[in-house]
Image 1 (cartoon, rainbow, N blue to C red):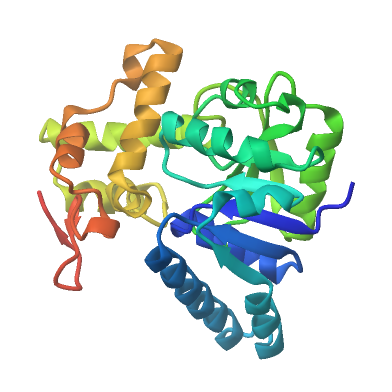
Image 2: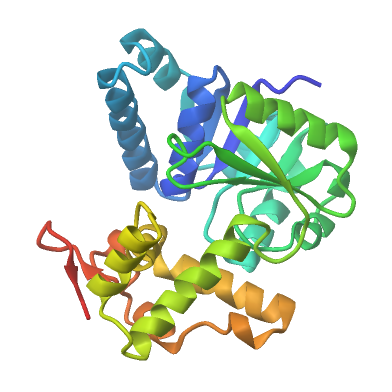
Length: 291
């Protein structure tokens, strides 16, 4: 089976990044969202990101134009049914993902491969709700998708070898590197990364250091390109909290208990860059620590 057409569910930060890299690699992309405004914003973002690649000499203006021409949009989920590969990139809530797959199933070709960009939720459990668990995989891209080189491939217990090999080849064609992860909570990257971020929030919560001192300590003392609290704001505190909850519930270990301060920020709607406030306040244009 050859994969030529790709359906992407969700036009947010991850979805538009996934659409970007697939279109640039020569695939025809159908991008879906429930909001026309989100789809327009996604196309605008993709165009600007491609322009940035042109200005840096990574691609030509002709390649940018061709990539934009390969992306179409739709607000009708059923339209994705005739694509060869569907990538769900909706919010990190299992019930939402299940609803999307339930709505897609009646419209899919028998050969269509289903995947989820989930960063923590059980692939086996998501696949079990579909009519094709053998053709279902975790396809976890890193943020920002056009820049980050890694893609985690996660097989559910029923995923067949052909599906895995097809997606491994897709990753190669995208110019990225695949890492195979077993289907355990948060897989590899977030199993390691999120507890570090959570511990940084505990360090702030307990008054060990301020936002600025924690981030500067990790950048200058551990050579991290971003501090953990700055990174949490970039990812989205709601996403960080959702992953920590999956780890805590899935592994039943108190070391994964989400910091109460992270929960408080999420309850306040301070989710990071996307809402203008998180561990930093971004509303003035210059990030200012909130603690």
